[in-house]
Length: 530
Image (cartoon, rainbow, N blue to C red; front, side, top):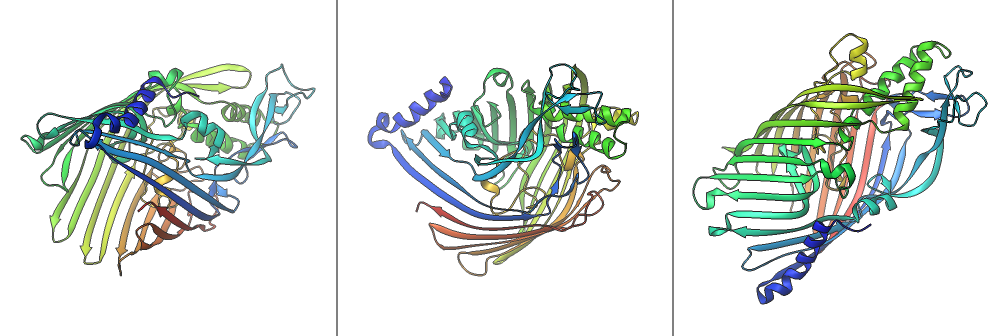
């Protein structure tokens, strides 16, 4: 796969800039290696698999404890960055492998509609199959171990990204270079990461008006949001963002932001996949094989698992964010936003044309953070609310509006806790995943506390805990995900090496179908160039 022409031009310019600038250029190389050993136990499992022997879906352990998993993983990253023409031209090129590990994906089974089977499904090629339509579904049979990058086969990651994360050129313009224009692939952040925090390909302008007058910083960006190189419908799916901040001091800001995303790739409809699966799973658990309700749910579930949820969307966000130093060692930060828009879903059906569904979106976000410095230690607290809602199909069944009132992000990066939000010592290179808030789009409310202590140079200890609640009642009648406690330690005996350790525990309550404690242990080493 070749890089798109604009990215290829940026790569060429970044590599040629030092030669063009002559003696004025400065180029720095950097590399790092992350090594990890991870053990996870009893993580709630929302995966639904098709059992070829019974021609039915295994749903009895839905949202129950998943299998224990221990694995080694690594990330290798290398890059160049530098400047030229008295720092008015800056450039960067970064590539990394993503998190590389071995995984076993479920084997694919092919199901068909059948009126002879009590489940309404049979294996493709069986005498009872109606027509030649085959629906691929993940089965209970494990596939071979594969080398993966960012949770997908490494060849697929290479084809989609070339492992290029950053490749951009930035030009400073005007008096004191107050205006900066950037073009290429780089990390983009919208709404403090609640809307988007990942790599994207596009252009960005940053105006530091404080360099010439009022203490304001204005940023505008237009980019293609996925890490993958945009192709096909992706070329018609941009994200536009605006941020205006009042900057009273170097470490403080308070302002507003707005963003708009048009999507034709189906990535936003895909956010409802887990919620759609849940609706049919609960119908299967509550009905008997052979009944019309069971057959209908089984066929809808097969169609949902076998195909992407296609469609399009137009979503807009508006909000405020800031970080202020309050004196006496106190710091306060906040992010608050509203989401509004429309989502057009094409819901797949076995042997039938897709069913069209229009869903309105109106979500809310509130995130409050406080920290108090106490010499070598600090304490703090946070409150996070990401609004959620019932699955659209469930709302239709109950006679409610099918509009979804959860807060959706394009590629959110939230690390409030280590298990529920995938934070911790590996958060910096974890694959960003577009997900609806909470479990199956139910949202999350999380009040929590944090503490840190640096007893000696090079040693950092951190702890945090939160009570995790759903914004809406879950499939088993409860709203409490459970309390979570996380602890971690980082020891850096030298500037080029650090050793990390992490231990996390979540005690599930009534939202899940199990009370078995969820745990995660991580040991790792980070090596960086001096």
